[in-house]
Length: 328
Ligand SMILES: Nc1ncnc2c1ncn2[C@@H]1O[C@H](COP(=O)(O)OS(=O)(=O)O)[C@@H](OP(=O)(O)O)[C@H]1O
Image: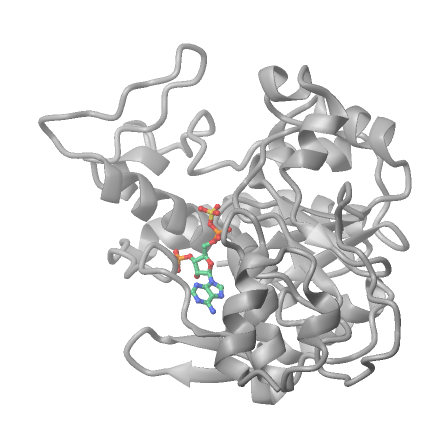
């Protein structure tokens, strides 16, 4: 009989190796399956942990997503996707595909979109995240045309913290000598200036033109997608604080068995965030996730929070849930 290492070598060559994988030990099988995904991304295998050598192995295929994380930018979209991927019945698209929001991608059609999806087994849920889906007016209609009952996950965060997070990202990319190249229609704020100067105009009013001060109106909301069966609002602040209860809600919403638990997380003091682990993964998110925010004048924070009150109220009404964001 072949040794495990020998078998692994054979399996790595053989793309149709699930049957053989089920003969290896559980953790070995998971590693083997991981090494198979064509763009070297891992693939969850719902049966990898069972030994059923006599069953005909299921065939993985690329499938259109059954769930989308549609935004909001800087609210924890990546963390949410990676956390859901801890579930054995979830597969994730590796990058942001930008199918529904970019005309040039949308023009390539659903076969192109499918080709960007990971391999999945029947019964697994494929999830893609592109935060700009939330702010692009064409998106709701396009998503509906693909699948009118696709599940939508919308992760949100207290708006002033979200704005500071967005600013921190812009600032990390901007330098005084090389300003970021502005796109023709909507130049980004000049993040070499302090946050306070971008959010508050010279006359003391809120700079409502700034993306930082006012996240643009939610396209899916404006399109009338009601929260409930098809749309779940995820509280990004709570996901940072204590991911498991939030994930439990999401598992239920997606019709998944409850599998993600406390054993899948440990708090990393240096990073200041939870890191993730399961049989095949042990990782923290990259350093671009969880950046240190600059200090912002508390008076400006208060002013912005007051400004957001009525917008938050309207949002709570739309989604049927009070997120309890501070009012000053
Ligand atoms: N576990 C864990 N580890 C690291 N970071 C975490 C985690 N959970 C949530 N977050 C928060 O995710 C914020 C980045 O949000 P996004 O991934 O949506 O950003 S992006 O729009 O895709 O650029 C990022 O924002 P910043 O803190 O401002 O960097 C984090 O606060």
